[in-house]
Image (cartoon, rainbow, N blue to C red; front, side, top):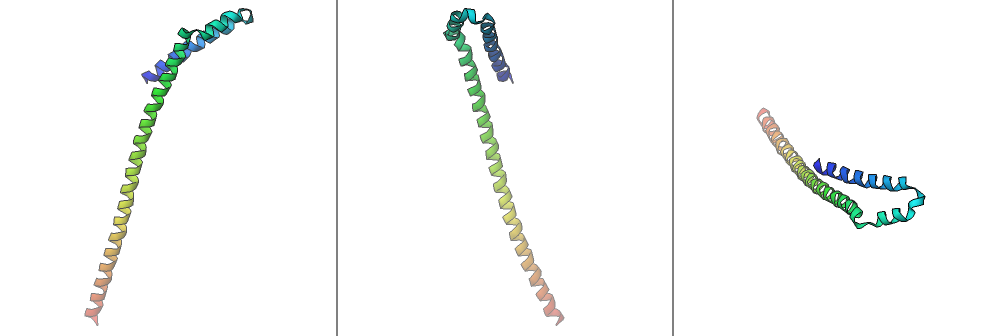
Length: 107
């Protein structure tokens, strides 16, 4: 959550800077152009982009972890389904065998 707060403060600084520049109006166009190109002011935007990239990479790692868990769970479910089907065949076969044995005794 602190990364989000850091990003928010960087974006707020950038927005405050642009609000100031737009408040100057068209009469100060040259000053605004110089302020927009100022490398020191651009560092805020670079830091915000770096923060977004970091957050994106973390989210991608978390997504990969969740996808791996889902893959494991689906594999387990598939194996369990196969086991259930095999047990059904085994118990069905045993039931038939016992039924035939029971008929053999009665006849």
